[in-house]
Structure formats: structure tokens, C-alpha cells
Image 1 (tube, rainbow, N blue to C red):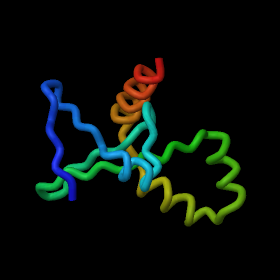
Image 2 (cartoon, helix red, strand yellow):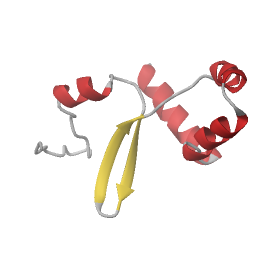
Image 3 (cartoon, rainbow, N blue to C red):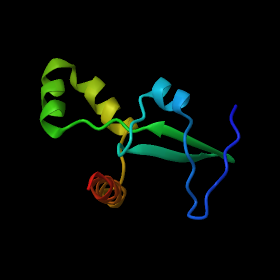
Length: 90
């Protein structure tokens, strides 16, 4: 367990050991969830559309449907995530 200080702009720094353990790199997206009073931060899995199409050919339809359902975000959330990610890449 780590104790962190929240900066004036609401920012925290994830300790290096945890970033390395979970593959979180600078300017890459993460997911933050509110789970019954806990804040959970985890690396986002980004799959390019072409790769997803290739996976659809490799795996059965039910597996792909379940994968997509489990990781679905609304169009508004997707747009916000992409805009934030692109802004930080510059």
C-alpha cells in the first residue's frame, strides 16, 4: 500500500514499481473506476480496429462478443478518452 499526495490540480503520481508491474506508460490511457467507495486505476487495452477484425477471424463469435461487451464504453466516453489521449501525445 502506498500513500500519495493529491496535487492542486487533482493529480497523483503512480509509483514506478506499480507502473512497471502493470505496464502503465507515460501518455498511454488508463481506466479509472468508482467501485463502491474505492477508486481503481488500471491500464486501458487499446486494440486497433484492423487488429480486432483479425482477432474476429481467429476466435469464435461468442468469445469476441463477450470481449466487446465486457469492454464497451459509450460513444461519448470513447470520444472523451481519445481526445484526452491525443492531447497528451502532443
